[in-house]
Length: 559
Ligand SMILES: *[C@@H]1O[C@H](CO)[C@@H](O)[C@H](O)[C@H]1NC(C)=O
Ligand SMILES: *[C@@H]1O[C@H](CO)[C@@H](O)[C@H](O)[C@H]1NC(C)=O
Ligand SMILES: *[C@@H]1O[C@H](CO)[C@@H](O)[C@H](O)[C@H]1NC(C)=O
Ligand SMILES: *[C@@H]1O[C@H](CO)[C@@H](O)[C@H](O)[C@H]1NC(C)=O
Ligand SMILES: *[C@@H]1O[C@H](CO)[C@@H](O)[C@H](O)[C@H]1NC(C)=O
Ligand SMILES: *[C@@H]1O[C@H](CO)[C@@H](O)[C@H](O)[C@H]1NC(C)=O
Ligand SMILES: *[C@@H]1O[C@H](CO)[C@@H](O)[C@H](O)[C@H]1NC(C)=O
Ligand SMILES: *[C@@H]1O[C@H](CO)[C@@H](O)[C@H](O)[C@H]1NC(C)=O
Ligand SMILES: CC(=O)N[C@H]1CO[C@H](CO)[C@@H](O)[C@@H]1O
Figure 1 (cartoon, rainbow, N blue to C red):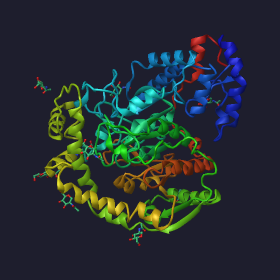
Figure 2: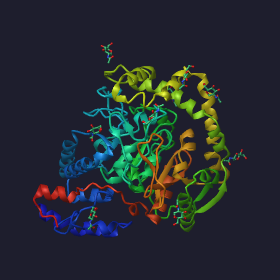
Figure 3: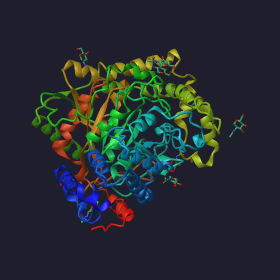
Figure 4: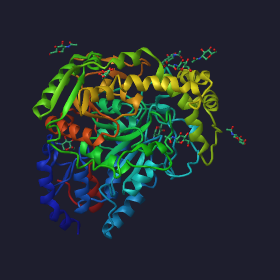
């Protein structure tokens, strides 16, 4: 049976490999990725088309896929600590998806495809939703988050939860990216002890190494974009309101958003299509301006850059001081022009300096966290540590030895508690209005209108700040890596390598609210002309491939 199935699909799969861009063909058929000469897609770069074709043609099953990914997670979790929990039901769900497929039921493009989600996105199953803190271990979640429910409805298998900077990096002034009490210290795979960035650190490392098809992260200001930047990924920070935050551990209702972190623009688009949409449980989604969510996969058009006007805000670009990033960025502008775009250079966004000179965002986030954290914990079915507020969370953290206090302090919460109000206070609005003005009319939306632009382009290192303040979207695409002679520096906390040779970096496209369809097109057209991701190799790789799993299950010879 198996051998026949393998023979039947051999030609189709081999052809799929050969037409793949980005050097994938080189990896398509070798001893670790083939059985009897039939190639399996190497999991570090398998995209949705590869995985769906393999499942459709019977080359492998979802159970094989889950088995392979779990093995790969175990192979690298020491030292990388990128996953906090593996879903104990993942193999059973995979078996159900395989049976459904065999019976002709197909839930859509993600049918039977394993996805990892950040450990602040709740699932009503055997997994906890911890935000990396023991305060929430054992807390009962009343329902799936809307994100989890939408993934399941699309047929995806929630494989597990990814490590993060604890509380999405909203606790301490003295900590490290990717550290949580529950998950330990996440590391990146492009240099030993690499700072993975954060706060969606584990989602970044997991997607980069092919430990799942792709992952979900969350962003308040940089938490999808920055780890995508540092881990050689495509990350989409959606408009606030495009993806529901219901039962996602919050920082800020005004700035939080959930989005995909994937190895290609098209894969990210598939995930975004599955998770976008209105939700009565998150009324910010009522701002979605479409009757029907655009087809983000179809937006992946090689010619999407033709006729587009793309602005370059030089005051943002100048603030990135690393010469290799500046050089690659300027070369990228040539790629945009070559693809038919008009580059509108030498723009200045006057709001950028104004925002950096004030502490509007700090005040907005503190007020929101006071209100929104209390809102989240009030929805829990059981709450073993009686966390009802930032004050009780602080008391728990300071009295639990596992939370690494006082070395990792709680100064952000102390400052929030000093405010003595949440976002219902009239005092909230001054800062919120100011940040929207500077990042909007004097920033992104002002530039888009004044110069009739489709998008702005910047190095990803400076992409998150202004969009965070107005809730507008950004997409990052791999652009390059730091060269061999880069001086190695450590992070402020002293436990990770913050800058090193081989460290990836990206380029970001920013647009108006709900312009994801346009941004995805631009990003795809850029990605397909540059194909940088596969030129950057991790220092540490998981070994197990689908061929190993299928060979073991079927007794076939791996050759
Ligand atoms: C075979 O494929 C694996 C997985 O992609 C890769 O790590 C390895 O380098 C390849 N080996 C050869 C000899 O090309
Ligand atoms: C959303 O709902 C909350 C409370 O449920 C309310 O305070 C807020 O004003 C609503 N926001 C919008 C945009 O409707
Ligand atoms: C939480 O509150 C309940 C009911 O008041 C109490 O029985 C329990 O001991 C408290 N738990 C902790 C960890 O404080
Ligand atoms: C911050 O963390 C570092 C590294 O662990 C530690 O040496 C230092 O004492 C901490 N600082 C404070 C003020 O606690
Ligand atoms: C909070 O207020 C107290 C009392 O005014 C002050 O000592 C402390 O430094 C403040 N903490 C922060 C983090 O702002
Ligand atoms: C921002 O919030 C702080 C603290 O509530 C307040 O002192 C300050 O006046 C606010 N700024 C604006 C522009 O409203
Ligand atoms: C857009 O034009 C308005 C009106 O001239 C100006 O006030 C604003 O600063 C401009 N914004 C940007 C980002 O150029
Ligand atoms: C690294 O090498 C490049 C060119 O080979 C050179 O321009 C650059 O100055 C060097 N950087 C450092 C930090 O030595
Ligand atoms: C699934 C997994 O690898 N979990 C690990 C997460 O990190 C903690 C702390 O380092 C480990 O104890 C878990 O085994």
